[in-house]
Length: 226
Length: 230
Image (cartoon, rainbow over all chains, first blue to last red; front, side):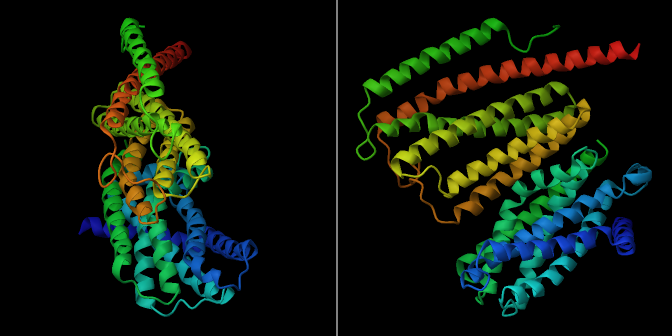
């Protein structure tokens, strides 16, 4: 119970400070919109092919925008040596990590919830045919992205080139997760439900989430304290 | 140098053996083995292409082991082994990718295709290149070793995901020749494994040399720190 309370306290603290300053979420949201705008120059945005690549576009925008939030997650604790204080506090590293991951998860989902309708309007795609399944894909893939991103955020927090290192190290590890999310989103935006062989992609997402959450919880002590 | 990881004479013998075996294998490949029925002469690239991939993944597996042992024992020799073996693995991965591209240019007419094996190999190569980039960015020795080991564990865990997920896309690659439906003649198969031996020897010599450099570098750094502390 204590663990859960500590985790939620850290998550609430991160969300509160983000809502007060809005530094990461504003930057991330405008970045996502800029990317969605830029995509319209890369191909004919009205054509039928848009639908075929819609999942890919959407998740690229989410992955690029997400990095800005994940970058801030641990970097926010650097001024005034807050990270050392957190490490010295009785909160175990795993609770600290999961709390931060939860806060990042909420922020990423919020950005996705804003971008999805905008994407639907700009590119004339209907994404509301299977809302439940699309929500499931968003929840699972975003958790995968969050958990990997938060570990790498902790791993790179003390580096000089933090802003460059995080996406460089994180994206290759995220490839399976992003690929599954892109495939499934494309199918759903195309108006088809997830059936038959495509269920395997859902299983892959679940497996990815479970394995990387466990690894992150096991390794975070080593990353933060050593 | 207080302690050498491996004696010069051992390295010279291993390297010499590799050179002799490679010369012998190349001679057999070019003069004794018949052309493959459909591909002609270029198929011989497989005798380097496939063993290079084996060596590469063996190196990545050893790097994982070295990373885990480092975290358990905190002995920097294991960190030196991890970085040496990763670098050699990347070199063999590059041999695999480049030899595959040369083959593809001749047989398929294109340098690159987003087939699952090519894509997976490239992703793995980038994952481990990321490990080296991360190491470059960290100055402090034990922090570098610790975070590097964590990265090795994360990297190796994602490799199966990469292979399975990318495999679900369509494939243009020739079907597996060592297992499954594909068949390979016995003389070719024995050459394929036979040529792995000298490549492994080369890899072992390179790892030993690289590890020696890494250990010397650490000694020099320690001496420099000691000199500055006065």
